Image (cartoon, rainbow, N blue to C red; front, side, top):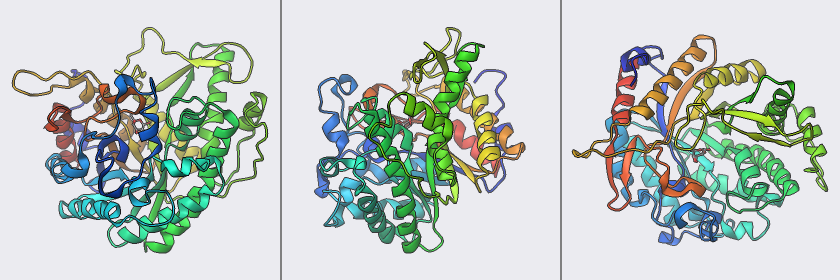
Length: 452
Ligand code: FCB
C-alpha cells in the first residue's frame, strides 16, 4: 500500500452493508480433471495443444485441481469473508458432445459446489459460457453456426433445471466480444480462427443465444436474475490528435457498443456497422436486428485503459499502445483506476441498466514468496484499493452498482499466456497445489468487514 491509498476500513465504509463482495473464476482456468467423470474435450483442450498457441505449452489438464479441491477453495473464500462467487459451468462436462445425452457425473460436480457454497453462506452466480465450447460443437461450426442458438438454449435448460432450487443469479456469456473477436478474428484464443466475417457471425449468434437461453433459464428457475458480462475498458486516443480520438471511438463502436446497443434493444450501432463494413468484415454476412437482451443486471469486466493510436485514416488501421510513462501490470495492461468510475457512469447514463455488478477486476503481478512463505503483493493491493475507490466514486455519483467480484480467487491458467500470469488473491503453488492467502486477500477481507 502506498501512503495515499485509503485504508481498508475507509474503503469499506464507502459501500452499503448489503453490497455484494465476491470472487470470479472460470471452469477451464481452474478445474483441471479434464478427462474425469465423462467430461468431453473442449476447444481449449484442442487449442492448447497446437504448437505455439499457449505460452510454455501450458494447458488446463490439471490447472488448480479445483474439481477435487473445491471444498478447500470454498473454505478459503469463507475465511476471506466474501458473500458471493461467480464461476462458470464447463459445457463439455455436462454435455460431453455439446448436445444429446446429459452426463450426470459432470452435472453433479456443480451440485456439490453449489451446496458447499451455500453451506458456507456464499451466494453462487453461475455463468454458462466462459469460452470452453465442446469440441464436438466446434466441429459443427461452433457459434458461427446458427444452430448453436438451440444448442446453447438446451444446455442452459439442463443446467438451470439442475440448480434451480439454489441458484438465482445467472449469466449467459462472459465477454462475448473477446470470444467472438480474439478467438475468430485475431486467432489468439480457441478455436484460433482468423476470419472477420466468421467473428461477426459468432458475435451475432451469441446475442441471439443469450436471448433464447435467458428464456430457458427463466422458465426453469423462479425468480432468476439474468445478466451478461461485457468487457468494457477505458478507450482513449493515444495522443491529443483528432485522428487518434476517432480511432478510439471506432474501436468502442465496433466492439463494446457492438454488443451493448443490441443488448439494450437498439440493434447494431450505425458507426460500428460503417467501420466493420469499410474494413470488409461484413462480407457475405447477413445481419438482422438482434433481440433485446432483457437484462436484470449488467456485468462489467474492467481492467485497464487502452490508448489507441491511428496508423492512417483507414478503418481498423490503428493499434493499442501504452504510453511510455504508463503504469503497467504484468500483463502490460495500462493501470487507470478512474477509467472504472468513468465507464460505470457512462453505462449508467447511456443504457440505464437496472443494476450493474463489476463482475471482474484484478491484476497480474510477479509475486514473490518470502522465506516465511508469505506473499506481500502490495502492488495488487494498491491496484485493488484504487479501483475500489473509483467504484465507490461511481456509486456515490449515482451508478446502480450492487456488487464487485475480484478476478480471481486463485492464480490460474491465463489462457494463451499460461500459468505465468498470476491474478489470484490466493497463491497456488502449481507443483504442490498448495494455497496461500496473499496479503491482498487478507486486505480484501478487511474491506469487506468494514462495509458491514
Ligand atoms: C478476462 C477474462 C478472464 C481472465 C481475465 C484476466 O478477460 O474474462 O477469464 O482471463 O480477463
